[in-house]
Image (cartoon, rainbow, N blue to C red; front, side):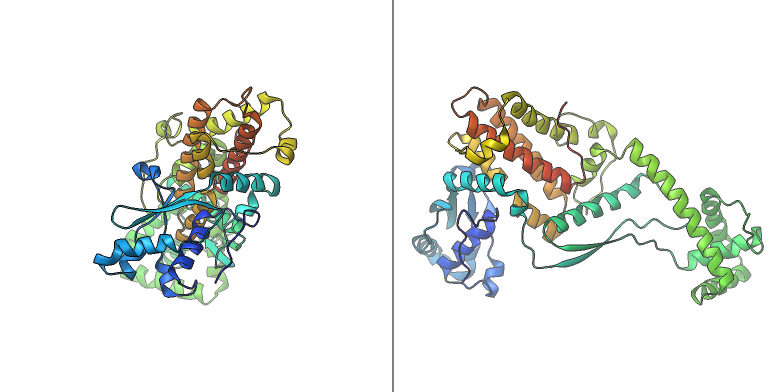
Length: 417
């Protein structure tokens, strides 16, 4: 059976540690098939009043329906004592609710402040991964849709790298197929022998593809020549490989020029976040008006929340590094506790984003953190209060987690607005 982590050993993943406790109460070994089926959910909405986490599925698999209520009470009675858990109770039709100890949360955040945010990096079963992203088509111009693959691919790579996975990034350029045979054969008609001084642009090649495709469909002789061209290319014929290399060179040169301009013009956080906040499996509408809004789930709002936290720390005039060494954190106010709990859900969020390859989960987390931060700011006086030291530490922890989220998303944080 796995050993339970003490507050000093705690890696920041509440859900993982709670699962260990539940498996102990159930008598299930970590390598048992049932352990894989066991799940916990973070309580939301009205459920927050009865617990921070809820387990509502395992009893349906282990006990017949008439006995489920008694079975869940037996689990609670067998629940191991832990400094992490304040209480464990049953509500409704066999729902088990767990309340995390505020003292445990405070000490865990203090440890992170001293030892760094990397101590909260999740542990994944995979140790090496290849991320293959951004595949521009040879002989075609870039457009705004090409932004999505590199933005998502870079974030997935960053998430895995943070989780101590060795990542190999691959930028695969495709289209070694019939398309190239068409273009090369038509290119030879315009430029026999393809002289070195031939002036060829990406616009020309893109137009050439349209013309060659039409001729391929209408002219049987050209169709055969294009097929033979592809065979010769694949067999390494010097003449055809030279033509292919020329097309690739033009495509890459034009792509790099356009990417440089794109990075300068719109490659900022508003574009990245607008892309990443959407499920990568869904499409979305590219809208500058929505991206630049300072309210709602936008990068502007997130930057504002981060800059405000930094402003509070600056205005305090305190040496935050000294406070980390000597100060104590307390989560007595409801909004302090809610913010602390959200901070401690960082690791499990990153783990889920890595496991499911869904970067938008980090965006959701960061937006939720900004909202909790806003509530804390409005309801808990920091500078000049009796709890100033503790609340400054909470502000610093929030800023650290925000900046790590920004880093994972490939966004540069703003410290002043």
